[in-house]
Length: 245
Figure 1 (cartoon, rainbow, N blue to C red):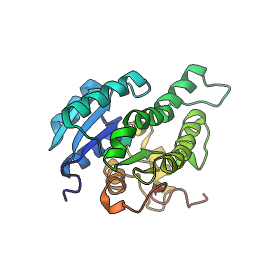
Figure 2: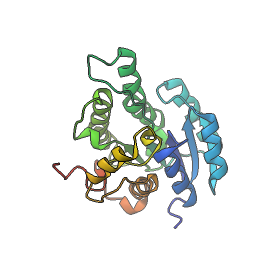
Figure 3: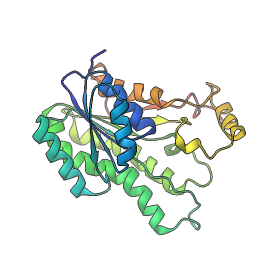
Figure 4: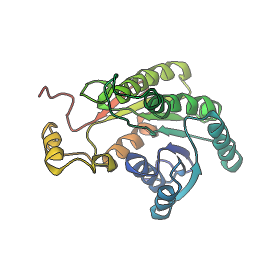
């Protein structure tokens, strides 16, 4: 498929995990992709391993100045932006009384504020292109477990923000989200195999998901095939949320 031939996409947090899989998926379908991340080494690896056109941009997505520079570069080099995938996040564990204020701020800035900054910076070109935004939320926006105070707040805010942005920028720009469940990324590396198996058993699919499976859902929502979908959130969780125990 070449659903993104002639399109330009910006993917935040694209140096690894779901972001890297999304960069590779969009590029494989013809998009010129700008990989926005602070990890230059990992970003360079994704660029080298991806078939298609990918540009790494060092971007702290919590800083408006970085967004302005990224927007200026993309517009100077291509003159349009068709898709924004807001995937970057930060994770710090702890209940409210355990979580340092700086950690709370970091998680909210990178996970939630960054989507606001990205849309604000790219609103004009996205509107001109009748483009799309896909944000990566989480099952943590809808169900709770100990230790995810800041992350759950950020993802819950992100899900609400997606609905609001869909209203604000309709009909020119579609804004949707995916809500991944347990996806086998580097965040699972410290978890013992027994713990991974336990969480996999809580899904209806009986396994952890793969980043490529989330990337496929993101590509669908960003494509013209989803032209009549906006303000929606698509669970990509193996049925984790519908299971009570």
